[in-house]
Structures are given as structure tokens and as C-alpha cells.
Amino acid sequence: MSERRVIVIRLNRFKLTAGYGLIWLLLWLDSLLFFRIPGWLSLIGYLLALPLIQLWLQHTRHSPMKRRAIMSIAVFPVWMLLTQAALLFSAYGLLGPIHSLGKATAFFVGLAWATWAVELQTRRMGPAPAHRTWNPFHLAAWYFGKHSRKLRQSLLTLATYALLFFMVSLMITRMTGCSIYESPAGGGEEARLKQVVKIQKVLQKNYVINPFSSILFNPPPIDQVKLQLLEVTQHLYEIGQGKGEGAGFSAGSKRGKVRFIRLKYEGGDWQQDMERGSDLNLLTEYGVRTGHIVSDRPEPMEIKRLKSFPARKNPPMVYITGQRQIRISDTEIKILREYLTDKHGMIFADNGGSSGWEREFVSVMQRVLPTVEPISVYLDHPIHRTPYLLPKLPYVVKHGRSDALGWVVDGRLVAYYHPGDIGDAWADGHSGVPREVWESCYQLGTNVIFYAHAQYNKWLENTK
Image 1 (cartoon, rainbow, N blue to C red):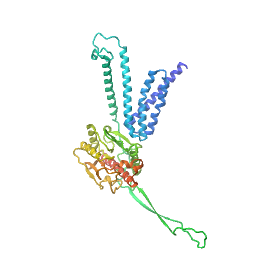
Image 2 (image 1 turned 120 degrees about the vertical axis):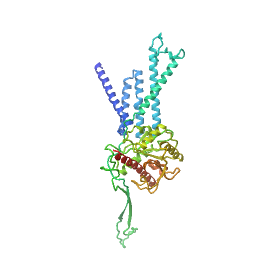
Image 3 (image 1 turned 90 degrees about the horizontal axis):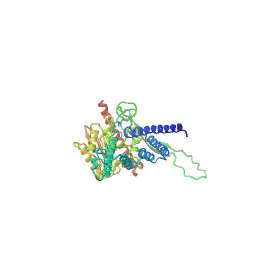
Image 4 (image 1 turned 90 degrees about the vertical axis):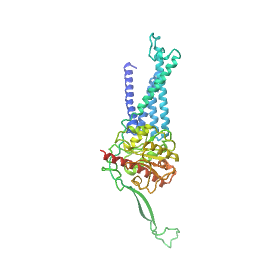
């Protein structure tokens, strides 16, 4: 092969790598900041890394050091590929292990390269200098002492690398300054969805009986009437809030959509029922029932992430559930307080399966809003009447109380606690509960999402 052809092949390989690097960076930033790229498209983008990795491994097969470098770099696209696959296929229980495994792998791979680099540089150092040196690559550095110099150099390398890794991880975690949330544009009235029952009259065929016929049969009664009940849902109005074309919100945008954000926290099972599609099922049902544009995926999110949303561009509602302990830091408590009061947000809490979780959530709210006492949210509250008029509070299993709790600030519900595990009813298969139960649970979920977005839209309109 001519030298010119080799140069062209290398140049094309680098162009291909640089092009994919830009694509990967865009996908990664979207997963952190924007949430605009569909999940299936992101998965395809991450899958493209595999043939590129294979191409470079084939090219470096005669250079062990270069192959190690390629495999080390491959940790990051493979990590993101596994994360995106878990999100796309609703394997939310795997997100935590994948994240921990990916972070640990990246840490030890980086530590190995840092140790190798320090060792290589140390070997290149000449004899000990006559004056005192600060160079950490030189074993004669004065702070290493006279004994166990190599051990102390290794410990310094580990401590320095761990500190840098922690700082970079923290910076990436806080890289969320561009996050925005926009509701779908439109308008409408805060009206009820009317349940209409139609009675359809179906006449069976009339039979004329020949009394002299030799055929014996049992004919149906003459003029038999069969009544068939057909239950349908009609939109009396376009469901929304404010003036605008189509169902939606007057302060929304054409690119906006209703999203379902679930809060992640330490100490419990925040991801309960996600693997069974509860969040996405409710989101889909909400879109069908209201006509609003909705996202095609749920969004698990750290509490600290709420700080990244600017004023007037933050989620109107976030969801939290579980059945064990809730551990939230003081910093996260402050972020939640700002989200509820200054950013006009709302928390939708659902007890996932224990009488103790109510105590956990109430304790959190006492820290978030120490001067606000919870009240019972009765059936005459707007959250239980629009768009669906609920005759009773639906639940799958009642954990403790039978009524909902609410925290009110300036006449607005900023937190709504449900005691009956309605997330099970939203999940695939509805956990075996009867149709009337899971239908009522979908209706309540629709009401809560709509209430939060309508209240948020009013605030946006009143504070232009």
C-alpha cells in the first residue's frame, strides 16, 4: 500500500472519529440538559460507537499500549449506551447499578493511567539534585522523607487523582444550567370531562313461523329488543387554561410538552413501579384524555437538578414515591423550598406501600415548609373535580389514612400526598385491580398533573 493511500486512510479515520465525537457529545449534553432527542434516536447514536471502537481496535492490534488506550476511552460510550438502553426499555432498577459500575470503572481506569504516567516520568528522572526539590515525580522530593519514598509517592498520586476525579464529577453533575421546561401551547377552560352513557336500540330480525313446517326449532321471541350500553368520553370544552388555539396553556410554547419528572433520593426505592411503565402509562393517558402534547419518556431526576431550571421555565410538578426511608440533605431541602415557593412548583407524592412512608414524607415537608401545616384535601377541592369529578378518593391499597394530605401556600396546593399506592394502578397490568379502580387512579393522576400546570400557567400570565 502506498504511503499516500495510508495517509488518506488515517485522515478519513480521524475525520470519522471526530464526527462521531461531536455526535456523542451532543447526545450526552442532551441527556444532561435539554431532553429533546428521542430515546430511540439516542440509543442508535450510542450504538454507532461499537463499530468505531472495533475499527480502532483492529487498527491498533499490533500496539498493546494503543489498544489499552482505545479500550479505556470506550468505557464512556459503552456506559452511556447501557444507561440509554435501560431508560428506553424501562429497566429503571438497573440505572443505579449501571451508574455505580460505570463511575467505578472510569475511576479505576483513570487511576491506572495516572499511576503509569507517574511511574514513567519518575524513571526518566536523573540522579537526586543537590538542592531541595518540590518535583513530585522525583523520589528525592523533600516531603517524601528518607524512608518509603515510593509508597508516599503512590499515596500522593492516589490522593491527587481522587480529588481531581471528585471535582470533575461534581462539575459534570452541576452542569445543568440550561435545563428548561415548557408546557404545550394552546388554551381552553378548566372544565370537566363529561361521562356520557348512550343507549343504543338494536332490533333483532322478525321470524314468520310456518305452523305446517316439518322443521322443529326454537325461534327467539318476536320483536326481541337488546339494549347495549356504550360509555364514551366527550370533551365539552378544550381542556387547558387561558386563550389559545388547541388544548394546552396560553403561556406555553409550540415545542413544549407535558413531562413526568420523578425525583430520585437516597435511602429508599424511588424507582418503584417505573420498570412496569407506571410513569409513561399515566403520561400517555393524560395526553389522550386532555389532548395535550406529552413527552414520550419519563424522567428520573436528582433533586439538585431542580436548581438548574431558570425561573418561569421549571417543571410545574414533580413526582415522588417509595415505601422506605427518605434521606434528603439540607441543600436539597433548600432547593425544594425554592422550587415550591419561588418557582411555583408542586410535589405529587404517592405512598408506595408502607404506613411508615407517610411519616417520612411529612417529616421532609416539615423541613421544607416548617411554618405550613398539612390539611386534609377533601373531594370538593378543585384537584378532585377537574377535569374529572371524582366521587371518592381512589387507591389500590390504603396505607394508614383514607384521605389525601395537602400543603397550601397562598391558596395553592404546593404538595399533594396520596396514601393509596396509585402507582401500582398505572403500571402494566394494573396490579390486578378492577377496571373501575385503575380508571379512577388514571383520572386522579390526570387531575393532579392538570392542576399543577393550570396553576403554573396562571402564575406565568399574572407575572409577565
